[in-house]
Each structure stands twice: as structure tokens, then as C-alpha cells.
Amino acid sequence: MNRFDFSPYRRSTVGFDRLFDLLENQARTNAGDNYPPFNIQRRGEDDFRITLAVAGFRTADIDITAQQNLLVVQGRKREDSGDDGEMLHLGIANRGFERRFELADFVRVENARLEDGLLVIDLVREVPEAMKPKKIAVNGQATLEVVRDDDDDSEGKADAA
Image (cartoon, rainbow, N blue to C red; front, side, top):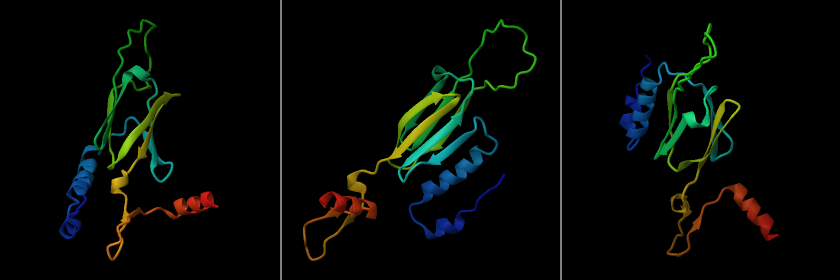
């Protein structure tokens, strides 16, 4: 088992204990767990997609629970009362699973759908206006404005023209 030593970082940082604990726990709990396989994709600066290969599962067999900073996807094993004959080879997994994803602050589930054996979960990060960086006026000027990206500024100039 690989063990990461975060001691040098813990000595020189304050308030990142949760992050280091999260990394250590992930390494410990996901050592041999690789079912079901999944992809995590960044679709934009604040848009993400998790895709899980859940062949053989129906919508009713899957539970998705979003809590604060945690997304849990569970698949329940379905009991088939198959009198269709004797199974000679069982290669398609039909076992239950639980997959946990730690989410950053302000990340929420926007959509989930199951199609063609793939469970697709779209996530979006929405930082509240109060948490965005603001310019602070010097010499007592009372106006504060939200700091925008350069892309937002160019759009505003195009709208004004």
C-alpha cells in the first residue's frame, strides 16, 4: 500500500488538515476498488461530468445521494428469477456497488441520466456572489465591485457598443 507523507506540508500550512485527511483516506479506501469503472471529465471551468459504466442496471436499481461535499452512487444487485435455462458462463457483473465522490465546496448535481449502460452525472460549481473576490476601494470610497474574468469584461464591452 502506498502511503503519502504530508508532514512537510502540514508543518507549513494552516487550515488544510481536511484536505490532507481526504487524500490519505482516499488512498486507503480505494486501494482495490475498481467497479464500476468511471470517467471524470471537466467540460468547462465550472462544469464537470462523471460517467459510470453500469451495464445491466436499470434506473430503479441505482440510488444517487448528494450530501454536503459528498456524492454517493449505489447500485443494488437485482435478483433474477430466471427460469430461462442453465447459465454456462456468467461474465456480466451483476453485483451491487457503492462509489463515493468527494465534492468541492459549492459543487452540486445538476442532472443524472442512464442511457446505453452509462450513468452520466453532470455537476456544476456555483460560487455564491458573497464568496467571489471583490475590489476594495482605497481612501474610503464606498463602492465595491465584483472582480470579473477578462472574458466577462469583453462581453460587457461588446454589449455596451
